[in-house]
Length: 156
Image (cartoon, rainbow, N blue to C red; front, side, top):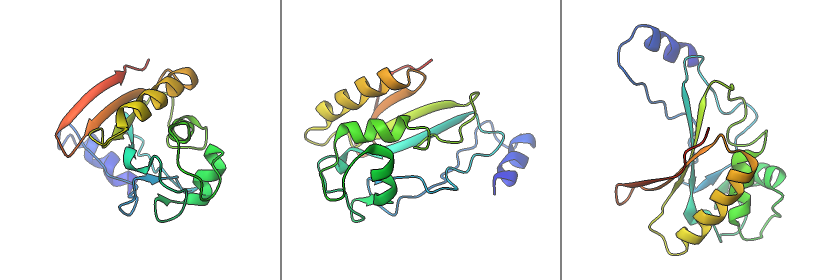
């Protein structure tokens, strides 16, 4: 519960509290439901993770959790291949990945699975669009599999 996280923060039980809040049921992409993300008051950084393995896959529930919501937010059509522009739209749409985030919170978009073929080009496209639409977002390219991380955009 958000209040439990706030209590732990106020109690100073640790210098950092990391909360995994919204699972995607092992799909690379997910559109937030109406009540998501749940953001405790003590949150200082909100991280949204998108899997690059979703790029090029059909827009359906097998590849995108909440495919109908994803389409509504990104302009994608059911069944069409997911494009880098859709990821950028999800990250920057007012009802997208970072909705409900107070202005004081630092927002970080993590593009994971950077080791995949085609990931570099998809990442370049997403980063350019995000920078145009919301320069406050920090963008990271990661490969959890390889233990790698690269900062692409510093954000404001």
